[in-house]
Image (cartoon, rainbow, N blue to C red; front, side):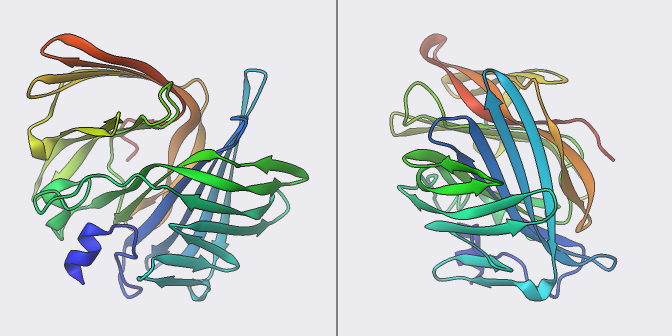
Length: 323
């Protein structure tokens, strides 16, 4: 079961007896007309003070260039949480999540969200014995503070949501699916993601974080670019490295290198909102995320530019030390 979990991060990685533990899935959905981006984050928080299951909802609405962000947090008892391994699924209250569909029924005084979305044509990352998941050989270690899994770099969505009284179509639109689990988010990190480029098959994710490791810390890099069905991965575990970094509020520039390839990344986010994040299993930290940013990429091979494009509806988190 250990190796199955390592290779398939979508399945429930923990157990309900753990303390100081969180686990959360991140479903990102961009609507058919690209006027709405919605992130659904179902998860659990296990700790001595406030154990519960939850669903976070992050809504980004674009109207004639004006971006409005809202976030909502729905709490549930742990008895409302259940999961299945084969095939993978989780259920929180009346809400269902899997690799093939989402069934949402959420309502409180601030939000009424209802609908079913079907998922197909997932784009998994490449896996080997050395790299069983996006964390490479670090995925085998059982003492990391936080684990990250990429389940699908891009996939097709079909269905509709009713958001309050508005119908939002997701017919032939795109989604992204990843997850995190462990004790706490890194104290400092930058996370970027987009799969809305000029070439519809292009998808990109990036994470650069301060990682606690056996009494010391190091900067861990994971970047994955899928371009014309080829995967370009830059990671600490495959000797990828950051050669230049410039970050400030709402802006990040990176130059990363591996072997003959160099990737330049410019991420810009003009709007952001707070989301709950884990610290020792409790959802008591706050991170800032935008869902309407842009990510410009330039890929070089032996200093010759071979690819350039800009991704929209980008998820962008730039977190300096938050504890």
